[in-house]
Image (cartoon, rainbow, N blue to C red; front, side, top):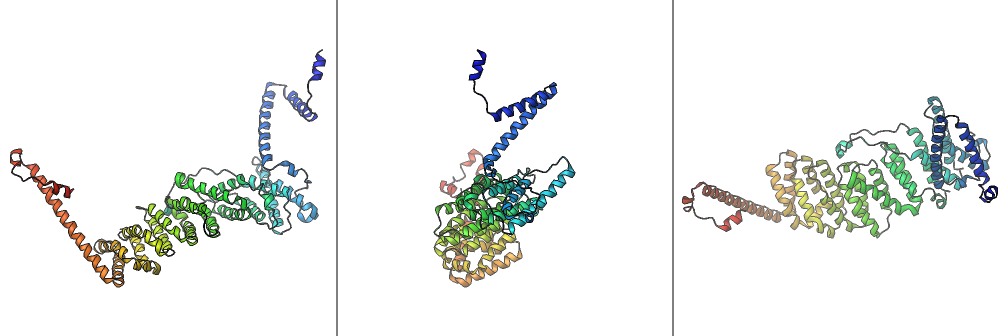
Length: 506
């Protein structure tokens, strides 16, 4: 009866039976002692974890693609095999470079590193010769090899968050494994730039997760690695048009995190350099998406303390946008005034220089919209006790285009600038600034002497009114102090204060 029931039970496949029997044999062999049982259980746990990793890897780079590839000894040279075997040898060498070197045995690890280095050099030479054929199996093997060798987690940063002037003095840190990384980057760059590469097939492996991991590498401390990444990302943006919106969005998210959360990132300058080239290729009229990128991503980049590290690339991107659409100059100047520094003189010098570049491109209509708040800020810069800031603000009058804008709108700008020049001539401590102030006042008189005299008279009237108000305030306080010093009986002798006088004093 029991045998009949057992026959009705479903049997396992032959493959599973063989695996179970192998597992049972290993279990029986290890069950001679309690320690053997513990080691077997621990080994089973490790093997199960490895199988999980293998499944994840095969999901990204499916092993079914490699099933029809004939295995070729990877140590052979490309010159020693026939042309039909070269693609298979290429894949075998890529798989060899996927293996991690043995760190437990120094001698063996050095030999493996040398073999891997020689293999990478062969691969680079083979691809650069132009004889490589990238079928789907080769593309999958290439992306897998690059992912294994390049994608890694960087150690936590120990440098303090310094200002832009201090950050420039820090020496760059170089990766000790750069010799191998450089070969991998060179190989991947030639792969992406290959003219016969089928982008429709390659985009299945150079996908969005792959690009995200590539963008994470811009956090590298090594400037050589960031420079290679800059070139590779630009080629990916140009080759895979389907990924362009995703790349822009991913870079925007990196900048959002940098500006509003961490203010720490090593690759902002390189990312902006890429976008400078991308922006120059935007079609006119600009899409609303691109204008939002300017307002929400580029303009807030003026906020961090370390803006000096990437200010040159940022200015180039902003100027490219204004060149495409001059009406955007109003939004840019408004954003600069919003983030204008008060205590950081080096940053203030950068803002003045960027404002001058924008004023060289701005139209008269857009200039008239922002000239009042802009020249109020420039007047404050003229009175700065940091002589470089005051000197740089005076230099704006040496720009012919800026001077032309001032001449056409002198009725509004002269009254804003003249009081600052007058204060400089009386109070500034630096002789160079005093000389520049004298030259600027002379230039204003040459442009419109009557308006300059009118501004001078108005300033004298305002000064006299201010002095009168100060004297009234002083007399009011003296009367209050005198009234507070008398006894209550004698206080009636003091004439009462007029409410109007108190309100004026306040």
